[in-house]
Image (cartoon, rainbow, N blue to C red; front, side):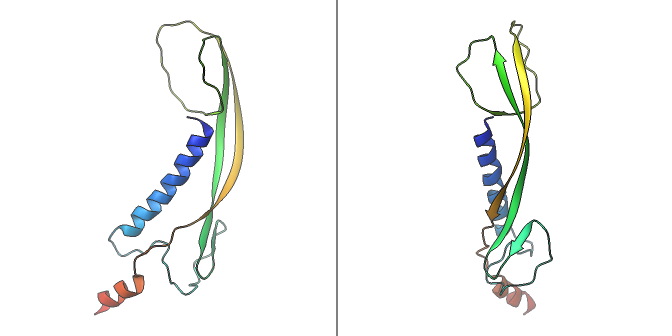
Length: 124
């Protein structure tokens, strides 16, 4: 998988997971809106203001660059994965593995559930 595809997939899956959790029944309110600047438990990777919650997504990725005697038209940085594919063909290749680290700030999507109305209904 190319690096840009991997980063895109990870970030969209995180947001998709948050949105799925926000819609699930069960009593929890994930990134609730209209919380009046509630004082959340402190965490070094999460920031909260009156209306915006954010976090940092850290990446620590091993990349491979291969030079092969086999003719293929592809190139670019590939995210390292483990696997084997033995097809009985001869080829030679030089592989270099590099490691990169970076962080991406991410504004968390607010839940559209009306948590204060749901709590009020539950106590009646």
